[in-house]
Amino acid sequence: MTPSERLNVAVVDDDDDVRAALSRLLRAMGHEVRAFSSAEDFEAEPVPVDCAIVDIRLPGLSGLELRERLRTRSEPPPVVLITGDSDQLARDVGCGSILHC
Image (cartoon, rainbow, N blue to C red; front, top):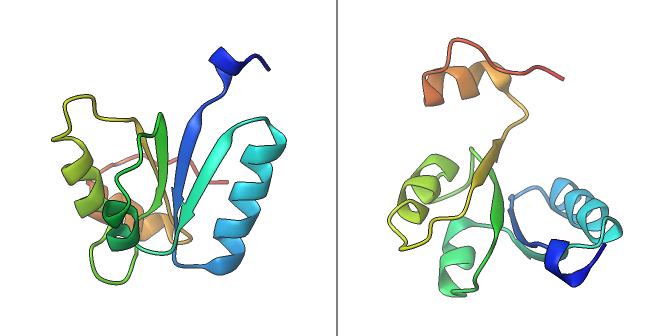
């Protein structure tokens, strides 16, 4: 991977194991990763990111609320929403079709 292909990725998840696993995977793929246990922690460190992977269910500010705040940036990063409860994701996001793994 060339430096121009390397992404700065934020992983925001309150589950320590999920946060660590995603961070390890992304680093193994050659990306720079910053991990945060809450949306508030992420917002407290205004780091530029190319992509944010965000759990929907976070204590305090939810992943959906964080996504909306990121959309107000001059160059909003893509946000990948994740959850262990895909039915809740469909209800929260209003999607009729969700990819189930």
